[in-house]
Structures are given as C-alpha cells and as structure tokens.
Image 1 (cartoon, rainbow, N blue to C red):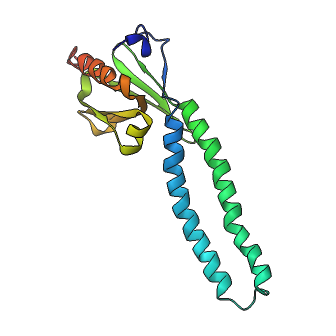
Image 2 (image 1 turned 60 degrees about the vertical axis):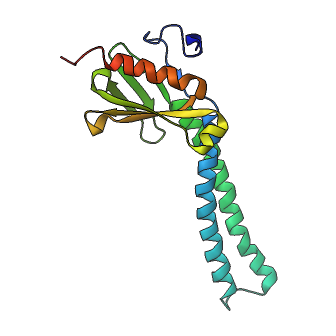
Image 3 (image 1 turned 45 degrees about the vertical axis):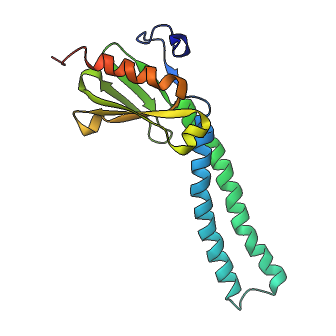
Length: 176
C-alpha cells in the first residue's frame, strides 16, 4: 500500500493523524440507536401516563403531551450533531519515535501514550457497520491493562499498514 495515504514519515512529530471522516456517520448511527431506545422508553411513559389519567383534558389536549417526546427527540438530534462533530475534531494520534500518542475526548479530554515496547498484541477489528462504511479499529494490547488502547475510524485500506507498523516498532526495543 502507498504510505502517502498515512503520511510520508509516520514518525515525524508534525504528522498528527485524524480519523476517517466516515467515523462521524458510524458514531451517528450508534448514537441514533441509543437515542431511539431512550426515546421509546420516554414515549411509552408519556403515553401511558396521559392515557391513564383523568386530570388531563379531553383527547385533543392530550396530543400536546405527545409533543414532549418529539421535543426531546429534536434536542437529542441537536446534541448528537454537536457532540459527534466535537468528538471528531478532538480525536487525533501520532506515531512518535518511541510511543503512540492519542488525544481524544469532549467532556473529559484525554491524552494517552502507549509505548511501543509495551505492546504485546495489535488487532484489527471490523464490525458490521464499520465494514459497511469501509473502516476498521486498531486494538492495542499491552503488558499493563491501563495502557490498552483503541484507534477507531481507520480507513480499511490503511489499517493493515498501521497494524504492521505498530508491530514492527513493538519489536525494536525492550524498554530498557
């Protein structure tokens, strides 16, 4: 594969990598599923509460109560739009000479450094939605569970090269 898709020098400090833009679609779909479940529960509670009470005026006014889930749905969509964009902008990583550095997080921003010499296993993961969108995840396993990491939203064409690069660098030093 052509390394220019990832960058000419993977170890150069100015080569911060960003996730594939389609990861936003993946996060939208996953979030929509979660939102749909939440909204279904809220709608069921409102419908049951309105249908089983005598204090609510006749049915015409009860329709107003059904607008509550619709309003919540609009708020969820607005929040999801903001959050997915913010999460995408915050996610970046770099192949430093002796470690992989990850920056991510919207509310709780994290910087994670995974030393190459601690890597024991580097896996590719392709879920059904990721395969459909042409993406994959790189899963990193290390000697310490606290340094395990994952890079989502890697283009399928690049994931094997990234995995091989990480495994090659994992074998270069014993950490001493």
